[in-house]
Image (cartoon, rainbow, N blue to C red; front, side, top):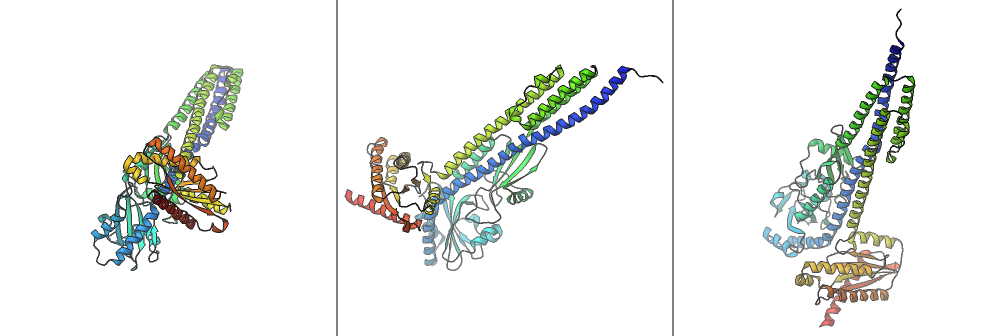
Length: 553
């Protein structure tokens, strides 16, 4: 029997051994890399993007909530006055109703575009209105959950809802209802200027454009209607949004290996107009094509290098093969170590590069690891930027942007905490800037805004960090001075008036900045009714203002 040559047998055995080893090695590398890619790159980036979008929605919604609160009180008074007038005035015409409403409200606020009125029957049909687009609209069919809440209103009760969007047109409105004696509803709808919605859409688009991997962002209302010119939803999209509502605020579907369609929803099946956010749903794509390119480039480069090594191995002896195998083993170990902690990068590969080929392999791993590490650092930097933006939005949601003091919503939340802590005595001061309308008319709204800003700065500088200060209306502020008696509070407010008088001269030599204030000292026995506490301080402020007017005569 003819013997085969040693070289032939050696080459054959090496080919078989190396082929099997190469196959196992490639499988392991692919599994390890894919696991590390999903754990340290894909999942963190994906979750961060989704959480950032949801956080942006929530913070903007909180800002809108503070914006809406400024309308509720005046709208309640006007709605009741007009509804009572309507019931007591027989055979009233549509024109008379519109004139009556306009005489109360129209043109008093530069954020309001128009005001519409509606008469809704007790079975939910709009039977009369000065807004023809809604005539004949059946609320039972178009917004059944909303009607289920509205129809339970008692006679002569008022409801002011948060900002919503019309079912037919998507126009932003604030709606108020009064239940008439005959069971029908008298409704007022404030149409806000398009700048409010446009500002939100522009900011949301800017947010999407500046967020890496995010594409085709679209925003929708609770009625699945698009904001602005965003595309209409399909039945499949609506079905997926409902799925997101029953999960952790979002869900997604995989469009391809590197493209995902994400659906977020702040809406809840337990419908309540008092809690609903006017901005509740987003649909956007997350495109990881660039990440996949890096991954595929690495795997292709790796396969080429390994194939090259295999050809070279045909020409080396057993010792060289063993040495090479040891080099590869150590490189694999380094890759495993890198997979456990990719932020540190790959190091000391040159110690295990006895061959030019293993050196190239090590350099390829180092290049790729640098790219991945840089990508992780870039993502960490992006996370910090997103956190900074989130913190900024939280400040805007809790503070008045013009004056720098807290807004009405934040003040009432903190004042309730103060009452719960039984910290007494404390003083509530109701502050009103004198002659703001006159300043706006005589010197311009820019000067009026600067005057309000000076007042905010002065209130903050003349009080302590534990005191509470908030702007609750156009020229109205409230202050809670902790553990202070009325005499001390009066000195503080007089000092504020003196400072304002000096600072006003910097705006205009003829301008006299001043405030009127009312002080109410609260002891433990008085702390039960916050509305009454504020009402007392408000009344004393008006007495103070009238006394000043009398003294000037």
